[in-house]
Length: 476
Ligand code: 5AD
Ligand code: SF4
Image 1: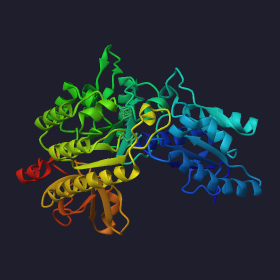
Image 2 (image 1 turned 135 degrees about the horizontal axis):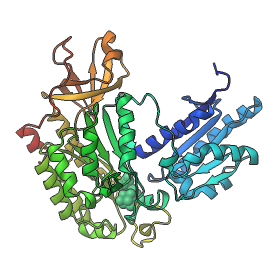
Image 3 (image 1 turned 90 degrees about the vertical axis):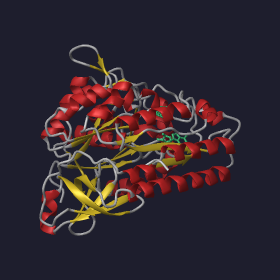
Image 4 (image 1 turned 45 degrees about the horizontal axis):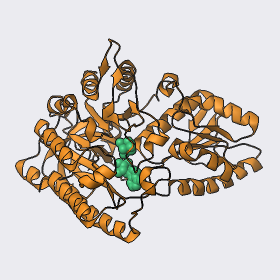
């Protein structure tokens, strides 16, 4: 039943964790106006599609969703009510005009930098009868205008510390949709982290398109890098785990690598995209690092934290990629040994330099290379997970699983871990950090159990180093 004065808000989030964070903050901005989250767009007073432009056919997916939503909007109208339809995020930033032209049912279009102005935009759109566009890169930071975050964030939360990117990889839209690099000041980040800790959050994942390019102004003067920021965050009481994503190899500085060596709260898992193992292709991608540079960083990270689990993004079939270039990528994968990874076929993004390269590869070549790479990465993920069986890992239990009594959490290495507990204990264990005996490995998750039935002792070890055979497996 709808409460009087309450409005129903449905947000559909596409893409990266940055968008997940942004969606939560949009809900925060709208809460004082009486908007409450619901899980279906049907009958909602406001629907926001928070879009992502990185994936292939991103805008087509948005247009087809808008087609579906139009029916719900008409339904509301027939009931004498309104549904405000908004498109947010990177597709909005890149294709705002086009959206308003092709989808007149849309009332608001706004980019990732302007959602702090949502209440104002809604009021303006209502006055005008729709068609509001706000895709500026404002001079002021949206972070200065956002309300404090949601009251009940759970055991693990995201905290956005950096946005935008100045790197201009030749395949990527981010510098055009998210704008120039910007770091939140240290004090603002620490204050948000303290509020999260006070609300019961134990694990914080720092977010940024180029998170390790973080260079935040400190209240005491000077600029802090991410390593220093992580150390300060580790001192906050209640915070037991820290992570950050996504990093660029060029910004893995000494201070950050050292933090992996001696800050036990910093989890031994790093998503460090390399994109390709070929120097020729890396240069064409404007990555400004070689395969050798990347391998040296991996070596230093492993020296700092021997059990660190690595993840990456790869693009296959970049314009001009030869069989030999692709073989270099497979070689790099073999040399590094990934715990998990994401891989994509190159797909041109309008307006990016690589899109106008002459030597675009046939789809069949891209598909074949992707299958080959995914086969290798899949084998490595299976081996990495299998290497955890028989070990006891500290798991932060985040939520109930689908089956009765099932709990789902994360290992230090970011693996999802499923376990079953008596149903009476299930609710009470959400948010606990417990030692879990790993009994089975699947390609994308682990299954485990609590060491002794009824013995729910808190976890003692911050993390467990892999044994020699695991290390050999993952670097095979
Ligand atoms: N084609 C294919 N993959 C891409 N990515 C970014 N742009 C493209 C593109 N044009 C991938 C990169 C990046 C990840 C988030 O998405 O691997 O790291
Ligand atoms: Fe895109 Fe990342 Fe390159 Fe920036 S560093 S342009 S976000 S791929």
